[in-house]
Length: 318
Image: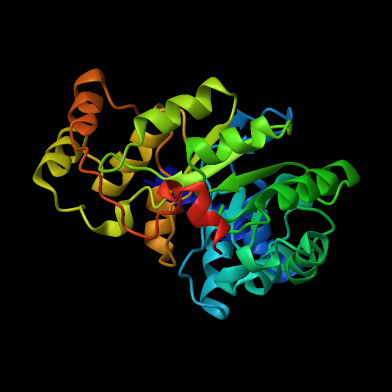
């Protein structure tokens, strides 16, 4: 009994010492506890771009993330959860908030993949628009600069300017968003290099199979925005049946579907819990039956605008 009492006392002393040591370390590093957790984050699976650059397969989207502290906090939560890829745009009005999070997160800039977009009205002054985004994002270069849409008669000349910015190092890679096959062919027929990325709305309810196949055949990575269909179909019983079978959330299932299709994926959220849950998609897979069930959900559901379908003549009117 005496021996047991001595052992218990010894364990209590060791526990106190460990607690004290942890407290001392926390005090020594101050607010850097989040930075310590960031440093311990697992590496994120990446995909290769036609430029040779690697892009994290999953990123945080910020469309409709209100400008201000909520967007900054969402990006910081994403970095804490393990994300190393954030997507924004000049038209979103939140580039400065993303930039603030980049400055505060404690991660080396080289470990974060930053995307922003050129708005339609700036196709005539591409470099100035890019430099404004760089200033707001507090960075010297962009990992990916996208033309937000083809809705401009200056789209081909703007693409030439974006390629020049890539050559000069302001952008590591350039790409497009909301481009249909005919828009991409226009660039190719002008004798210009094709984009490394085409960011379009894709999810099981809007699969755009022909466009995705065309892009993949041309070496263009398809990046899926609104991969959760803006939560409009999370209660679909067919989706929920798959989610229940694999013991995951419907949102996780939609994200995993995109990844297994070879798409890059940028779900948006400002909820810490959802941001973390959306990232928990790496240690499990959807089997063939689950993928087939999700493939069967095609409904041509466009949840936002759709410049993908705009004719060249319609684009020229903007």
